[in-house]
Amino acid sequence: MSALTFDTLPDAARAYDAWLRDAALPLWARAGVEPGSHAFRDALALSAAPAGAVRRARVQARQVFVYAEAARHGLGPHWLELARSGFEGYRAGFARADGLYSVLADDQGRVQDDTPCLYEQAFTLLAMAALTRAGGADLRPDAERLLGALQARRLPAGGFVELTDQPFQSNAHMHLLEAVMAWEAVGGEPLWRGLTDEIVALCLAHFIDPDGGFLREFFDGQWRPAAGDDGRYVEPGHQFEWAWLLTRWARARGEPEVEAAARRLLSCGLRGIDRERGVAVNGLWDDLTLRDASTRLWPQTEWLKAALILGREDEALAAANGLAKYLDVPVRGLWRDKLKPDGTWVEEPAPASSFYHITLAVLELRDWAAAHGVA
Image (cartoon, rainbow, N blue to C red; front, side, top):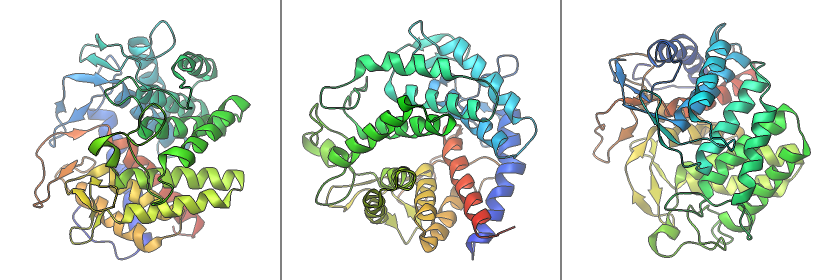
């Protein structure tokens, strides 16, 4: 996508649809898949040459999701088979004996870290749901086994423990919520619906500050804000991402109070927009003042999604323009990830992990365009 400014949301919707369909999906299917193994590459150089010497579970699962969703939305004839073969390779290389998934392998597929982090399990469940919903496989037994294995990680105060240096965090639960909502859309079994409602309740009771209406990242084992600066960290991108998820849940359940909480999250996240640069920053303090002026690609996509679902078309247009900055690279279909406070870019390969975020934002734009008769 060339450097441009969209004047209207319909212009942005058409441009992003073409970028995804004609450039990004074909490029990452061609250059971003390892011949023979069907594994997805972790990154591509800005020339589209292979980059990265590892295979992260989150990337394998996210790319399965991207291509399964592309198939379901009619964005190309070959994407379902790519998603299916990618998942088969992922399961063969990363699945543990207990049904959970390891987090890291080397570029030959040898597992380097078999820790079953909650974050990676969430994305594995999301990939399974997307592939099942697209008709590529029936992965209900796999998903139910994985979820059953997670039950040992439940906390007395609710939720699940994460196996990282931040064991009590909102972010892993956000992605688990996204995954179980996807499974609810597949079949609606009480198993998934109940966990969806449980995570939403945990968010409303503990993750969202009762006075400020913003969402925190890190906690103690009783879901109280973590001590020190960790407990004060607020990410604009996660305000937007939770707002999008909670709005979807609220509308499905008929809970307007929860949608009101989502709107407040959006408002808090907007405190993290650098209007001069036109981008969402990485971090705020819990008084919503600036903590980290650097920016990454993914918060721009979440800003766009939240603004669209909550009817803030002015903010959606601003977000679409912000995201376009990251896609302005010589090879169409790639992107930059990190913009420094001085306006220069971190020179590094394009991370495949961003594709999931971009795809969801473009699909949200497509839904908006369809609802508004935009051709």
